[in-house]
Length: 447
Image 1 (cartoon, rainbow, N blue to C red):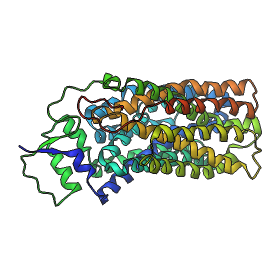
Image 2 (cartoon, rainbow, N blue to C red):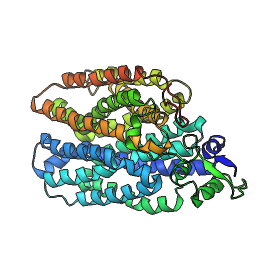
Image 3 (tube, helix red, strand yellow):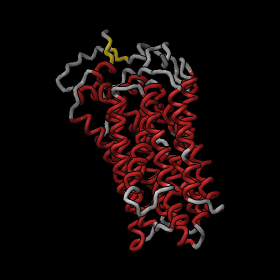
Image 4 (cartoon, helix red, strand yellow):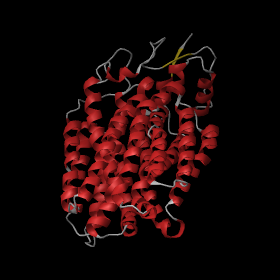
């Protein structure tokens, strides 16, 4: 019986319509995920006003959502490695879609917070699962670029949350959650019909799965299989041992996992803080309405798109532990200047573009880096658990936003303090050793 290495098969492919179909579908999934996670922060003042509370009272909503995201990253992400990328994505989209629709009927801040916390359980696992599937379906030479393009969809979803603020005068804040709930529900049947499962995942779980041959035929219809092939992957050349979640620390990955977790904790904490509070900071500390800030934010989104795609292109060519720190130092500089330069200044929008470019590109770089650290059997778990560490930062950091508002800090001082964490992230990533992708069985993941 002849061995058929599915990873080599994937890597030798030229880009075909099926690759772009997978990319398009997962980019839409990421768009919806980004929209649902970040929309609360974009419309927080309007929600608070409707419930007759101060903006600082929204801290409870942000806290519950971040707790849900953290718990979901640790508990739901491993399901993608157990039950498959496709099936788990469909489940997550269906559940968080239903919970987002239910949010429109919330009658108190507490009820809203509980529903966002429950939705967070399933929102958290979408990004690692989608990134894992793209990494496993795309030829190596284009892998980082494709991952970056999908993550750009996530950034686009976040920006679309800002656009939802423009709907508030006519339709109320509930319109944002109707959009965030109905879109994923409509997407579920399309995923079931048109999204293929990861080949390497199928081989890892069951090398006799008939779906392996069907997916190979989908990618390369002219390839003739005899039916006698023994499908293998580089890290599972034959009968492998059962995968455990502790494997994220095995085979030389312990030091890298620790540094990545710390970097994600600070990076995603910073993102959660600014996503939750930045429009409110400008309204309460600088007198800029959320509608005015939403318009500027949508312009700034272009910087995030360019930053995300650019780092994907560059990471196919340069070491990530040298490239990613430059983005995080850019976050620190631009964020400090945003707090100093007046909103009406002609320099404000370019600074916002620069900050968005570096923030989106830097976090996308961290996500792409993790696909190189973890092999197929634990890839979604590895990315998800690192995201879980980041969500812990997302629980803690937004509390600082409420504290800054309650303490009447200035905008300049607040953003200068927030700018410290990306500097630390840059140092952590710079201390990572060079990495290579997909270690063979028994070989360390880190050089």
